[in-house]
Amino acid sequence: MMTPESPRAAASASPTRSEQPPGPPPRKGLLEDALFYARFATDPIGFVRKRFETYGDIYRVPTKDVPLYVTRHPDHAHEVLVSRAAHYDKQHSAFKQLSTVLGSGLLTSDGDHWARHRRMMHPVFARSRLAGYADVMVGETSTELASWKHDTYRDLGRDMTELTLRIVSTTLFSHDASGDATRTRTAMASIHDVLGGAPIPEWVPWPGRKRVAESIALLDDLIFSMIARRRERGPREGASDLLDLLLAAKDTDGDGAGLSDREIRDELLTLFLAGHETTAHALTWTFILLAQNPDAERALHEELDRVLDGRAPTFEDAERLPYTLQVIKESMRLYPPAYTLARRAIADTQVGGYDIPKGSEVVVWLYMTHHDARWYPEPWRFRPQRFEKEAEARLPKLAYLPFGAGGRACIGRAFALLEAQLVLATLAQRYRLHLVRSGRVEPKLRITMFPKRRVVVRLEARRL
Ligand code: HEM
Image (cartoon, rainbow, N blue to C red; front, side, top):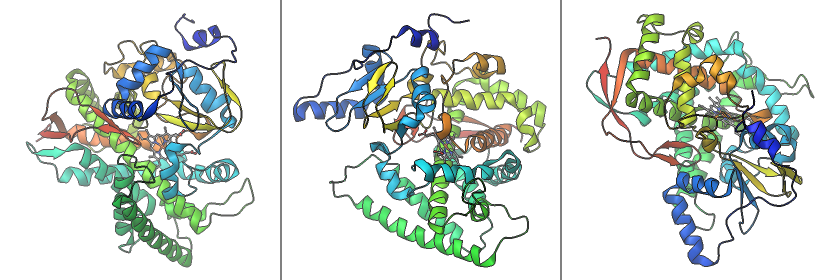
């Protein structure tokens, strides 16, 4: 039944308007600019929340170059990402730096090029492939476990990043016998470290830029020679890491051709960057939330002990561990690693009945959607049961969108959920993680959202 607070009701209450949404007045002078950046940098979430409280579900920011619209409403998200998706592309300012590294990979490209690649990469992420990836996920996590000891301290964020890095590298180019795979992984990680820092304007002289350029040159060298060796050797019986699949991919619904070396390089880098950090953050937040919520932790242990009884999980176990998945989903509601989605309007369009001129940028602040009491009562509470089947089905459309929505939604969604579920099941079965520092863990916002300070945990073995 529709309540006055449901998004559909709210949207139909707003008539078609041609005026602009409300928003803050233009900033005047350098001092106001400096104050704005300082306030935004210290507490971006508080800053944006205040704006929504002041102006409502959508507001306009008068910037010097392109108009910027910011929204949190699920119906607006649906307009931008699904029903009017053709009015947008992804060439927005936030992706500029990323595009220089990723080239025209899936995440940052548009139009026919993107559509062709999305078609060709679809089989790489097909359900039938997931079972093979699951073995890698559990295998790498078991290797990680071998270095964990009762009553020792670990840097949680670092451990999760290294683990997801190994998982994505093994699934991408595992079968490469040479040392290139390791060197490629190291060079990719160094690019990632620099890109993950604070955005630096082009005109600021900055040594990091040189480091990125050098790492890109090294990476290109390594990746192109890896591709050349595999092309020379030809297809292998039953071989199926991602690189093999990309080399074999054909656009059967289009021109029938395969991907060029350059295209494969861009996709490899994209999958690597998009595919490990996000999952690492999701796992880090999940362990933090479990340490802070003993009831949920107990319920998780109960499920793991009952279903697995001490053995390592398999691909088939994933659907027998529904609570484990609910824990992951609720963690990504509270701390969505990709906390905003941005688009550039390539045509005059509308959001929420407001006119959005061509060239504007629109940001869906999905973190705010996920913390909205209209869709999530007591939004700050960690309650995995929100994602029990029936409860999840009752959520308004696009009130939950950690993987985006529409044609540009995350191609690695199933991969990521399976990975998070299997890693969590493997580790939580053996250890409880206690936070060394008590109190709320503040998030830091860059391209993705992660804990502001290092999270140190003490391990307590569950099965000695
Ligand atoms: C918890 C983990 C993950 C989260 C939260 C996440 C989130 C997202 C989101 C929100 C988008 C849409 C961006 C937009 O609409 O602008 C996206 C796109 C994408 N993701 Fe993920 N992702 C995750 C894991 C992965 C993994 C494991 C892979 C690959 C191995 C991956 C590869 C991609 C790619 C290639 C795109 C671009 C898709 C396209 O535009 O066609 N992601 N991801």
